[in-house]
Length: 309
Ligand SMILES: [Zn+2]
Image (cartoon, rainbow, N blue to C red; front, side):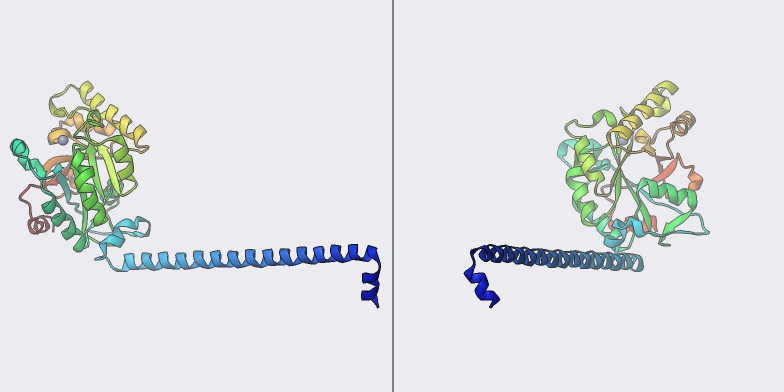
């Protein structure tokens, strides 16, 4: 009867349309709710599984010290363990990494060819060496700690902010997830043959550190205190400001320094100073006069391992 009435009277068709419209709106909002909830559930599931994955990766990193590629990138998961014996740190000193040109014969000892260089990094990574940042090295020296108790630690340093650190060394370091430090002559930044600010900023995002090597690379040991101070201060201010960091380490040009140099470095808030004094570093060198291991073009991966272990 009602149906008939609806059909018969004109005003009722208006109500029918209104009801149909309301029903349609209801269906639409229910459908909307269902899809939103479903999406939320999916995204919740995703974040849960990605947390799980990263946890598994972290566990892998801490339980397999030989898997250096995982270990070296996951600095968050490193547990620094205090040890009794004084910790030693081999600080390797490289300069240029490229195939030597005939006209470079005079600097031959500062140039390591890319294949030899890669053999060093590959060997260190396979042996499970942990590559330190300058901040981590400082922590190791001052707290006498080891990353996850691993005594195979190393600090790779490169002097002079040369072009090939970006073009040749960096891709190899990245391949093995090795962290390294370049000591920058700030007066040369952006010159052809040297690193640019953009390159340094980009490499910083991928484990590379940039520390101080003065403005003009003078022999500090024969300079006046004022010149020394300016050389070490202006370069630090430049790096601090342009790389947005607190520069903590300095490499004295050609390894030359005097007692005044060390005093000034301390006053300028440098925490670490690296020299060319040959040997494995430990805190007894003095934090501002640390030994380094010079890498020669003839240094093989085997002789390197024998030297540092
Ligand atoms: Zn130098």
